[in-house]
Length: 449
Image (cartoon, rainbow, N blue to C red; front, side, top):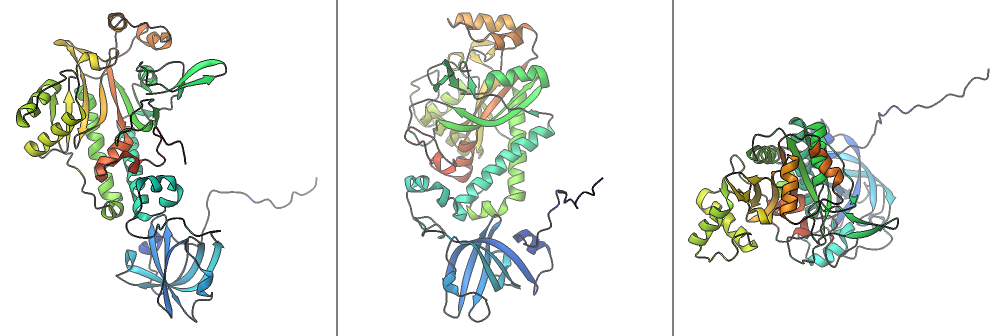
């Protein structure tokens, strides 16, 4: 038998000689030579000396080019070139992270083919939102722009980690379906192998199905709304943080779970995203306790305090949401407020009506700084009650056979919610437009990049 040639195996352990910022900060590297890679963010030429700032995943690194010491002509280096440098670590309190690297060698890994169409290495980008979005793959390289999405990652991470800790199972439901969960006209329709299909406007039906399987489930995924609005707070595709939980005693359990998520996440941001919070000058909101108020009571309070006529008793106008937010900030120093018991006619058919007064539902919205970021509530879990409500509304359950099946075969009391990730990020960062906190927004006029 022939001897096999020596075979290399992959072990999943890669020893790299290049260091990250955290490696340098954690080790004893002062006065020692290190190897670091990154993109050249900016070059400040001072004559004999130049400061070359590298952009890395964890932030900026200041390096010092010295004529006659660094083994490459300065003119061979340009902004946005990817490089690997070798040099000596020196303490410098004025530099980012309190150190700089005195350059010995620079190896150019790639050079840009043309200069940037927009200046991204200034502290504040002096450009319109439209230009920022048109050139999004480039403008996100700005450290401040990028920091927003680090914080957004922290929110999603907080959602996942907290719910895992509370016994939830993560699921992934389809985004192409035969019909919408909420009904209505705001659906994107598409051809699906000569059949009609729609893009999911919510994972609602699937979440409820999976409560019958896992008791507690969550999902972070896109949802699609074909609404022709062009406001600063609406998108046609957004990321929804959804959960559904079974064996609840009341819809209070759902609001408590969301409060717990917010507390966990704000603590996570405070602990692990301090650099980004500082960069964006963010003060984290108060979440130790969140007030709740009935829908009708909320309308009455703001009508009285701000001398406003109640025009629509069945819905909250955006202006009213703003005033409710203002009321609770002024009266209780609260950043968030749960508005409960929304009118039945403004909630989907599966919302549980309040047994004390069926005009209202056991449901809620969470307002943050006067903007709705969450809708949730208890669902109907008994087959007959659900069938009656569908009939009362003059609806048909055609196309909902699989959904109705779960109730025929027994479901526990349950409820859940959906949180708009981009809206939550927008309010947290004090932005005016939700597109600022959406990686690649989809709205009435924008399908790219």
